[in-house]
Length: 196
Image 1 (cartoon, one colour):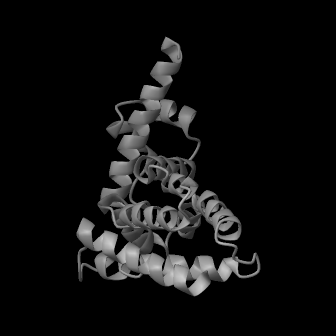
Image 2 (cartoon, helix red, strand yellow; image 1 turned 120 degrees about the vertical axis):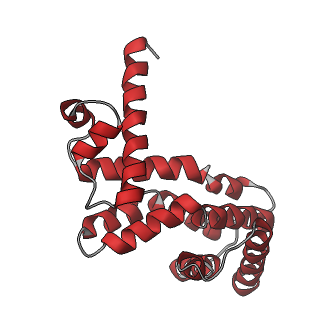
């Protein structure tokens, strides 16, 4: 990467880092492009050269947060042992969805959904397609689940894995890493017994 590309990447990272902090602290609606430019220590014109609108910037921020936090838990689905593959996927998936940053993002979406419904749609578009495609392929090819049943199976697995998130989001409970691992293991076992 040349010097010019390195500079562009540094500016892009500064923008994304500033935007992420502001979106999570102030909310989507209250954060302006002026705020982001000031926090990133650049002019608004420079900011607009990188991101044409707040919605585009928010999408890019969500994408980067997903990349940073996800560590590609779908890689586990390549493990030869199908049960272990699903267990490791489930554990990392749950860890990601219970991380402070992800929970803060989810809370932001809930609080802003009435004023800015477009950001909720962007959030659910980020990465969901890739994860679902990888899981669908795993379920049909490795677990021999019929393609007609896969959407329901996928919905049931995600529902079981994410069941504790509601309590955590509302501050009613927290989960240690040991509890996350145990929950993922139990959900995976129930799922495998039901569908294999």
